[in-house]
Image (tube, helix red, strand yellow):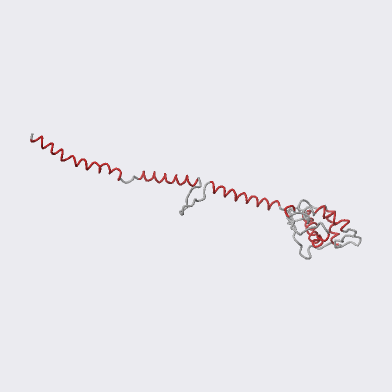
Length: 214
């Protein structure tokens, strides 16, 4: 009996130790530091989450604002590209147009004594056929095909200040292109050259001072 009592006492004495050690044993796995593999997995998951936000345009700046990305960035780039293409197309479509001529200009041929060309017999018809489709005071700016405002030839008074400019562009530069299509010239009209016979008559009329209506 004495031996049995000692066994029972020993068992009761050990029981609290077992109970106190159990929580510590249970807690130790939770307190263990993460392994290298676990750290790598967490880092990868965090990177994937951030990449997903950027793709949806949800990336956040340090101050809490959304950072442009994904669809927003693509929409902005598409808008800029569209504007660039429109600008390039406009520059390509607008033809070369004259500007007010400087005094002098290319030399004129001599006026023949027998000249009979006047505004009524030649000048008005020539300008109506070849020039006033763009250079007319009746046209709005967007209908002038790039022709400068106030450079108009639909009346004699409007044409007269620009007679040397007309000679330079419709005669001199047109002749240069007719001789050499690769010449650095900007003839008018831009749609096509005036026939040689009409260029000669225009040169004669202007050389004689563009005689006014009679």
